Image (cartoon, rainbow, N blue to C red; front, side):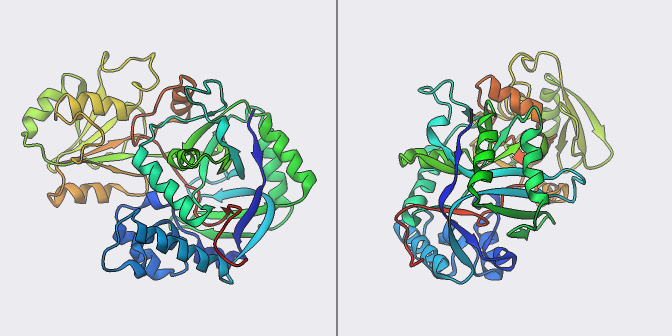
Length: 416
């Protein structure tokens, strides 16, 4: 049973024009701080001035992320946002969030947003709780997000959860509501996706949607483990969340770039043949099928297929290509034992093969490794086995856009 309650004090853009000015990708969708700075320069009202305050123009001269000066700037920028004419405070809202992705014609990603309960997150202390995390939480990262919540008295980042919706009734109810009137506001992202929001303040409609969410037996955290962990660190009761029917969601590839470890290609390929069948392919290779893995050496592209015995089919984690590559390539061949090793760079689905090849051709990296997207079935299997996904293996796309709906705590800086 999933609980969702209305946001007591929601901060929302006043219209779609304001949503375009205020909303932005999440802080963790950028490859560098300079990308963030460039976006803020283009859209100076961007919520990134709050979520990435060290990249704010006012921080020029060197403000470290998560430092006291950065958090003070985040709080000041939050006050300025609240006091601006671009947003308003609305009480007791749930909301419908719909994403129209031009690459998925006829399939709208639609979900119900509000406040989810911290106590419903499954942990060792609550082993039967319905919200299942599948990613290890890094304390420093979660602590940084917790400090931002404290500084701004607001939840800005949204947790993306998938629910089974076996009957399809949850999705149908959300679509029916969205078809009945125009959205209250929305914005386009850089991929051409449209993000639309319907605000729900009618008590009877809220009650019906809360009951539908409660009929879902479990939910899987697809994106935002650290955002929920940050709220838990602060002993909050709730966190900002959208529940999407799982069959409306999609995953993109999550590829890798590898720095030089001082080994000859001939040696690397010879050792790889202990765990993989290897074929050279005529051009750039982004696999679409599970257990087909691409490798670019700068001289050629190869397709790697795991041999029997390279993974345990009964273990949902070991069946995922990211784990197969980490164990049988990065660790066994290159000596890179930990996914957090600085010689690895993880490249999300918003970057194409040209970006990967350029990284190798420039000499900055030695290898590019391309992986097929994790399937929704694989993702659910890991959750149901109460296991942890391999690091940087799931890139859910399209992602929730930050700033379209925010949740203010009771004590919030600002005059509204």
